[in-house]
Structure formats: structure tokens, C-alpha cells
Length: 259
Image (cartoon, rainbow, N blue to C red; front, side, top):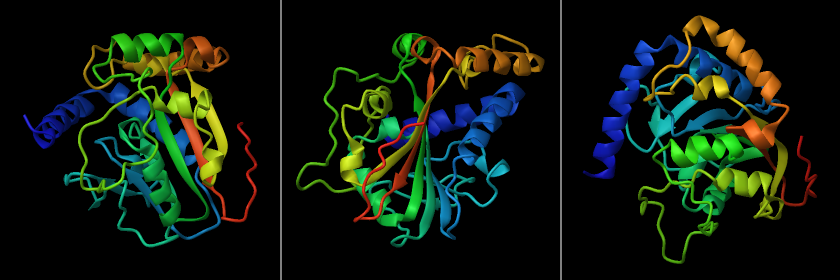
């Protein structure tokens, strides 16, 4: 089965599960609100989501442009993260929800993001986090590879084209780059505004798109309160990582701060 066929089959399954699970819709709204709170303000550029799934972020960010590699009814435009069709400095915010770990060459993508982002524009990344619990969730219970022992291929090789995209996943890459700092991205023109670990046990126990729901929908507020408590022990319980990168101007020194 081709990558396109596999993608489309997964999308159709996700649509069915999205419609039948109000709990999932409530959890994603909370995720989207957390993302919205980190948007850069003060410029008129577009807010763009790359790799948009079936969860509609426009319920929280109405002006968000939804994009993906493949056309779907909810997609505004087809976009390739390595070769965006947006003009230079025309985007205020780029949102990557469960997309960063699919970037085989994250450095090449971030270089393209810098081109499209306005001054002080932001990249907001929401990706897996590898704590003790995160290792269990993503290492044992999830089909995508963690890739923790694989070398991160920061730059694309010579002769590579953005159209040469194949399936790639390494769920540990965000943890390695933004928490362990195996690569210092301030060297590439970015300030790390925040790298926040989130427990999100409420999501794990919801079963996500494909697993069984382990608590009633009405108990979501209780589960979210538990999340807040467990957020105090990120090395043990974190399963999600919210990263905010801000584009530095070429002559601007790095602040290098992480909140």
C-alpha cells in the first residue's frame, strides 16, 4: 500500500472516531487553546497550521489557514513544509500539531519557516514528550518509532528536493532537541520562548483516536485537574511537549530563554 493510500485510510478512521467521541473533541479544544495562548501578536501575517488533521483548530483560532501534503475537504491549501508557497515574511505563526516528529530534516524545514515568517513570528510545536510515562505511551503503545538512538538528520543532503518526501517518524526528536538540547537551535536564528512539558494523562486515558476510552466524558474536568497536579513532575508524567520558537532578525542576539 502506498503512503498516500495509508494516509487516506488512517484519515477516514480518524474522522469516524472524531465524530463518535465527544471526549476527544473536548481534549483537543484544550490543546488548541494552549496553542492559541502562545500566538505572536503585533503583525498582520497569516496564521498557518501545517499537517492539519481532522481536529478543527479554527474553532479556537478562526483565521487559521489549514494545510496538509494531501488534499482533503477541510484543507484550505496543500503545502509542503520544506517549500511553502507563502511569500517572504508573510506568516505570523506556524503551528505544527504532531507534525515535527515527521520532519526527516528539521533544520531544512526550520530554514524555510524563517523565510516565510515575519520578524518575531513564531513556530508553535505540539509533539510527544518522552518522560518515564511518555516512554511507555510512545515506545510500547504507539506504532510509530521513537527513534531515540538514531542520529537526527538536521540538514537535507546535497541534491535532495522537497518533493522527495517519504514516510518518516521519530517521536523522540522534540524531546532531544528542545529538552535535552542535542542541537542548539539558537545557532540557526531562533529564540526558544518556552518548552513546556504537559502531563495530558486525560488524553492518554481517552484512548485517542484508536484506543478504548477509559473514563466517562463527564469526568474530563476531573482528569484535567489531575493533569495540572501531575504537571509538577514532568520527568515522570509528561506525555506532551509545547514548544514556542521565535524568529530572530539576522543581527539580533539570542535570548536563549526557556520558560
